[in-house]
Image (cartoon, rainbow, N blue to C red; front, side, top):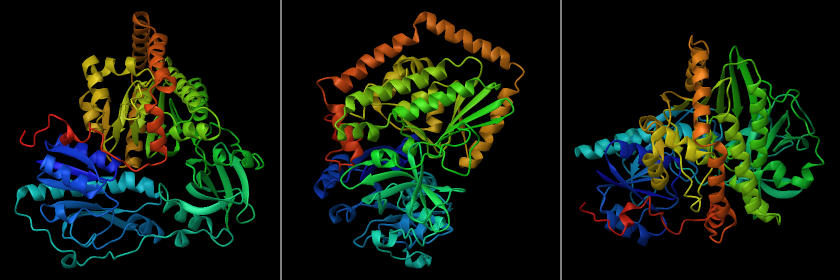
Length: 570
């Protein structure tokens, strides 16, 4: 079928649905919901059999939904209505939640139900629940709804006939999100910040200045007077609650952008005591820790939990230092585990943008950041004594995909999305040795096609084209268990020494054909034009990306119906 995806943005859910529908033989095109007239024009051009709206912030115009079926993906159980569905579910400590696919009508979220899927809630940030449980449930529900629509004989029941448990709820306001630092315990503070993570954050004050808080983590040991800022560690600040303390990882000041907490209040944070971990590369602790190392026999595991998968210059340098240290350990397999929601998304665009806000140079910070990413990738490519494994429990994009490909095998969880391209960020060329790493896996023609088409890849599709080496099912804990088992088997393989010898021989051969420094210099010559050249596209795109500027048009590689040679009858 021809399906139009009408969405506010090409977010992770929309990407997943587009990829899943395309892989099942459907033809999809994307239109950003900018204005009623734009939506009407898109429908007229594309003439879809069905419209699916994965992520909207306003109603579909009656001129569209009254003439053809429009399916709305609502992140709530049957009967739930309102714009803060997941926020309320976290705030009310719901044990079970769900996704409902309903038909658009005049009354918001009130239409008949085409499909619904429930899931068990876990204690996590709203953004994490959305990327995992909500996206997984929404994918199942949409595929079922599309199948029912295609059958032509399904009559969607009304919500009232399903005895709904959900109810209509208003927008969750900041007054209801607010933290009372003198009275709220750590569990309450965590829940409030998690219910607002991603957007809109919790309105609060730090150092006497108004801001919004994001990215909260529990602290098990340190204490202080309720409300007091008592410690800092790397990018996070520790604030005392009524019964303990929580780490605040990210903050957004009024009129600015979301940044690591210690960078947002860079000067003020220096007055707070620094509390490093006793053993920095130690096993994970019941405290905030963005880089951690574990070891089980001959298998080492390096975790790096960076917010939204973004890696600043300093984070790249610290992770490289951890990697250098881990490579000296007496192991034969080294797992690179990334974070639960993201493995890596490459350079840190918000930190780069911040350089331009503090009278520095965004171009200079971009250059430092990409070189730090390259240094990290080089450290992985030249690992000789261990098999390195990139285990992707979460999504990965841009330079993060090629950082993962710098490992030997790449194992991805089935629900993961990969975006192995750069051009969406103002025609950015990209580095991380992709011109070496990608063609040798998929071939030169396929590599150019991946970069040109800029399509999200499911883990199954990535495996099929040779970009990755395994696609493993299950949720994150199940994936981690299987990764550990596979790594142990790899470490115990009787031919492991031969595998390592073959790896070294391949690297020596590739180096003789064309040195890694040549790939790097060629890539960085292109990146230098992106950062310092006459075309400001990268800087403009980055500025709008970090400030979440509303879209004014849909990129042409997504809106196929707006191509000049498009014909609806083809």
